[in-house]
Image (cartoon, rainbow, N blue to C red):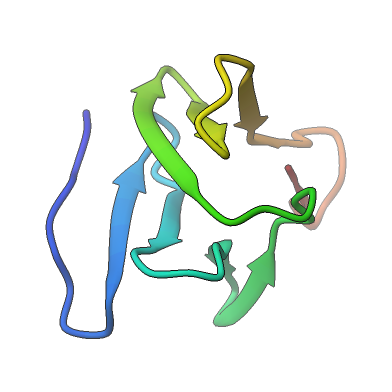
Length: 89
């Protein structure tokens, strides 16, 4: 399941299989975040001028920084053993 559509606030959403939506800022500087319990959680990215999303596969969001062919990824998962789920990226 994948969603990619332009939003009015200049972000593109990418939804992974577990329902998590990654928001990619369209313009520089790059910014990538998820919404978790009503809060924006920013991904810590290397200093970059350009983030190029590739897409999602399963629970992983793939992208390239600064036109390099090195692919970075963020994976989300939930801890089923705890009473309160925690998200890790």
